[in-house]
Image (cartoon, rainbow, N blue to C red; front, side, top):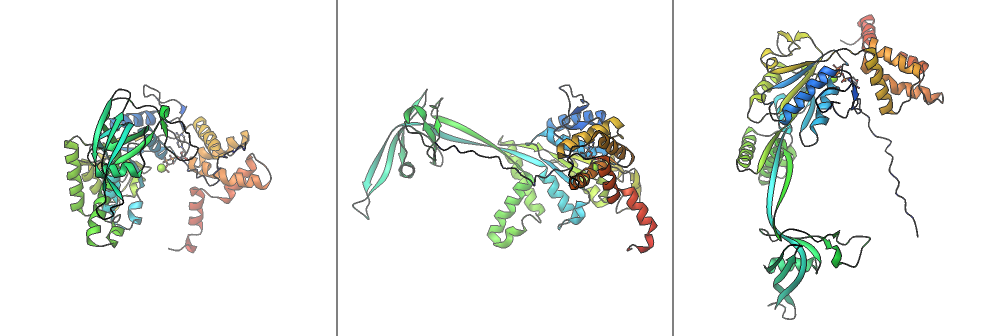
Length: 453
Ligand SMILES: Nc1ncnc2c1ncn2[C@@H]1O[C@H](COP(=O)(O)OP(=O)(O)OP(=O)(O)O)[C@@H](O)[C@H]1O
Ligand SMILES: [Mg+2]
């Protein structure tokens, strides 16, 4: 016999983002932060506060409100926001954008924000179907002569008996269903489903006890004898976002007007279409067919937003269908973009009033060391004890982000000398080659006359 081994593909291009080590908020069952857990270290108060935000989101009690992470650069604001996303799980939409993105997009700033907001609101749609489901006990067809080809026979109906462990039902089915049964050659022992409304037939498998054959390739899946009654109500649930529904609505409309219309779909959605979608969703919610899942819109570097964007957001979070807004910034008192006034964190006061503020504080040496250890594990870059110490000091003196970023160049420098472990010399050389912002600022001052203005 030939033994076939399947090797796991090794993906060399696996992308390791600077926050890939974060798996959650690292809280215990009482919501208390554990010093080192889920990839997060220290910053206990901020993590506990974030845990409360997660609970509020899950209970749908954050409408019209938001959260603002404030703290110096490299203190884990983005990291903790990502922890929140992990805790919320896949079913709750979490949309992350950076404040500066509103300027780079091809659409208007407010349209870009509107799309982001609508991507952050989920709609859980429940669909119920009535079906007949069971193992085929018996099937017989009635044929008639084809009026155009007298030698051929066509099925005009069938009688099929479906059974489960607890039930047995005999069904008389019309021509369309009989044809499908023949086409997929339904046999005794097949486990099938017939949709009551559409008459659509699906084979779900083959009941084990009835099938002696076992196939290696293809063939129906072997299943146990089904239980319950033959007539069933089946429920399927899927979650889409309001933006998905907008895009579908635009495409449907475009299909009537022009073929190329749908290419524009992602770009701009008219307010009228959105209103329509909202109304339909509300109807579905009233009929108990859908449920709104408010997600999170996370805007990193929120001080990059301008006055127009801020007032748009303030209005939007008060709307009926609104996500929870999470902002992060490392700015103190500064000018609001697009206006000539200063405000705390560059955020207008009427929005600031609606935000719960979570401060993050500079790390202790011990915390920085722990974070660097986690990153060296995550990136698969072994460090000597001295190298770890050196990176820790750089993290404290310059910035944690800079220190984390030096790791990879240092690894390459070590590899050139045939060493696997990164040593202090590698870090020293990497730090000479790559400047941190304080150094690059010094340089720009020094040579200011020679830079483009
Ligand atoms: N408490 C922590 N536990 C584990 N890793 C952390 C923690 N805080 C920060 N990090 C990591 O350190 C690096 C810098 O942190 P982060 O980017 O979250 O800082 P920030 O506060 O968002 O800074 P900025 O204001 O410059 O955006 C990232 O790689 C991040 O994942
Ligand atoms: Mg950040």
